[in-house]
Image (cartoon, rainbow, N blue to C red):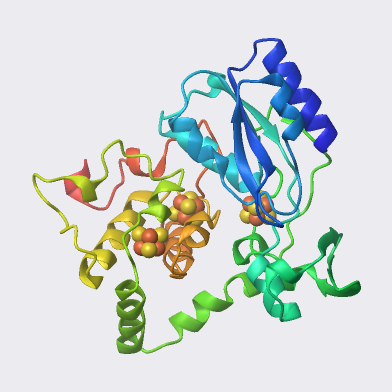
Length: 316
Ligand code: SF4
Ligand code: SF4
Ligand code: SF4
């Protein structure tokens, strides 16, 4: 897949079909990748596909001008479709290079499985349903269901369905939906006052760095409400009340747009379990409106249309 990606990406730039290629290159730390955004056809040799291509690159589409060839996993392709539905991206301006995605390895889970820091690991590899970790020459094998990110365990679209170039054979979802929900369900089982206390403590730790917003392709407002001064919706001081309100409003803004890519939770420097909010909203949207974001570019986006039979008068 990686060789095919390099040659396809180079050809797209050489033939003038795109202005930029957006993909992944090796990161500066072990077992990481970093986004590569380039106009240089020689730089396409640095592109990689491996079990660590974690970022949702769709977020760059609203920032770059011109035609873009973009490396896309299933969840990222849904974010692109959602941006098309919201008229933030024109379909003809993107060449979607699809990666059938068997799931992304969660380094924190690997560290816990082998009780080692990531710097102490020699190698991590994935073959089918097994992940092999090598430490000091000794190999340990784990089921993929113990080593992948929670959102990948419940992935509904691992192979992009909206795609111009598909780099490999379509892959099936890993289908460990209950494992994907474990953290969320544990929280839901708490009594309401305990859950309130939990979130109060979590948002006491929030430093309002906005990393969760900045990585999210569904957070595309040109001016975020938190930066408004007239009216000033939130004080800039990161008190827990303001921090919680920021997330409540952010979750409403991404309702019907969030694809459960998990990037917001991964970006949080203080490890607030943000997916427990976003995935809950994703499920509520699914239950109430039978709507899954980013599945059909020709369907209207959830928040921009209404039905004649709408229950509430004010919306008609
Ligand atoms: S959610 Fe699905 S498509 Fe996205 S990274 Fe995980 S397995 Fe891949
Ligand atoms: S990434 Fe985490 S710390 Fe930063 S604003 Fe979001 S919730 Fe707060
Ligand atoms: S809210 Fe989080 S999980 Fe949802 S699309 Fe944005 S970054 Fe991805």
